[in-house]
Length: 77
Image (cartoon, rainbow, N blue to C red; front, side, top):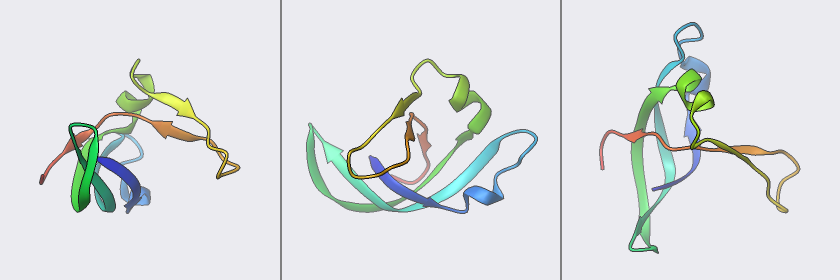
């Protein structure tokens, strides 16, 4: 799943970092090919995501702000 945006990031628990968010603008990828749009829920812990060795800061020529690239759990795929 490639998630373009999430709804409700401001509702995460600021102390524990736990989140459960809707990601309605996502693409499903199977065997390296985009097979369609999907609407998923993701959950995890923001603080753990920041500490993860799999989390990277990424940059795009299309946007002036960096973004985080990380892995998280998908609830309803």
